Image (cartoon, rainbow, N blue to C red):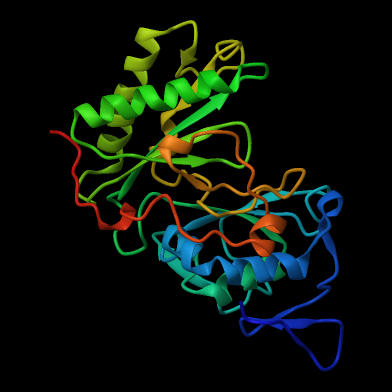
Length: 289
């Protein structure tokens, strides 16, 4: 992992060519994770995080005062943003894109704690190259119920000849992700995800719902197919979360499904040797029909 170098005139350090000011500022106070730690983390996992976020429009969670301070969503460029972060013009909109570790660290410098990419690349914004099934349990729903739902969706996808991958969210939920060739449009991909989710609801309406209303989600797992809408995002694998303990959303092996223990501090101390998603970018599969 590249070492941070002291900058000459202030309390900044240089990480991946980017000046990181106030490096000792605690971003996750209880976990003891500083701004410099987060910059070092982004460099340490760049070979794993970048394949999930590079060359994609990003929605960012900025928390300039750290995870316990005020946080807000950022989708468009703002004054003072480094040129290491690329701007992508899309009609009247301008999105944010990173291409390398310098771009990641430049975002950390501006208070970004979470990275949420589109399901399409900057090269083809109209055709997604992944489908995301988001399992978001209501308070009090047991973890086993979330696992059961994820495995049920996997079984349906297997029956359609589609290989799927599992990811923790760094919180209480799971994502099932399908890499696809970018051939179908957003509406077709969203409709496909909705159809699969509704089948699970039909099988167990007391356990699952696709209705986002709070009262409909009571005691159930919400299956959010709207992650597959144009402009919608899902947290990236290896992205930190602005939650207690500095957790990370991480890829999981299906056979090792369990609680997510990954944190920024743990990965910095003991980087993972491999990834449960070795074939993710190599698959060539299309949605049925």
